[in-house]
Length: 233
Image (cartoon, rainbow, N blue to C red; front, side, top):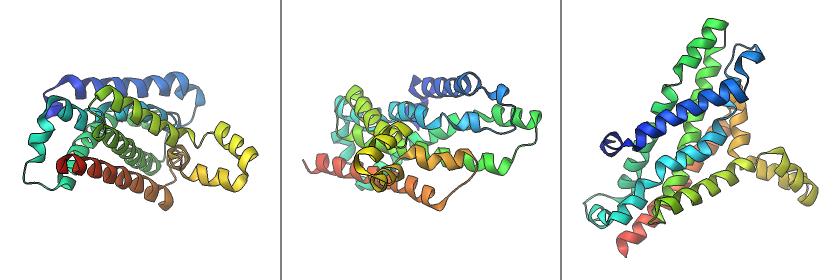
């Protein structure tokens, strides 16, 4: 957290992400033109924006340590690998949570304009934060296997894009025509976009919560394995 606070990375990330969320909500999402007292136009773009911004905040978690040579010193500390991985991940997740929290004027605006279901909005924020954690975990894993922040960013965005685009109609229609409806359904279940759509409408499903928690756990495990390999090497 101190590293984020003493470098411009976190400030730039938070400012640009909040600005991007606002721009997409009012311009592409046509917030006022929809005439609905909800934040569906706001949540609709979270998967696509997080796909880029979360790897950007996670790219330096391990790659910067490896580039500067500080990783060897870090790994000599009397701390288990899982603690190092969890600490770095939680710091990045806290920055993402701050960015989401700073969008609260939208929540206030929609309450001024109408009578929204605030419980549904809160649920959307909660699942959005979980999804951000999933993309951050992907970025952490890619950062752990690369000594270059740029390479880590590109790899993480590519992996995140696969998990996002797998739920788009274009991909699902192609798979349905090529491999059948059952295979298309399996691919849809692997998509973060598919699991977030319900939350964007205020519907929180247990399977979606399980999906994002599993995504976080899986890629943090990959991170721990990569870091442990460096420690043993």
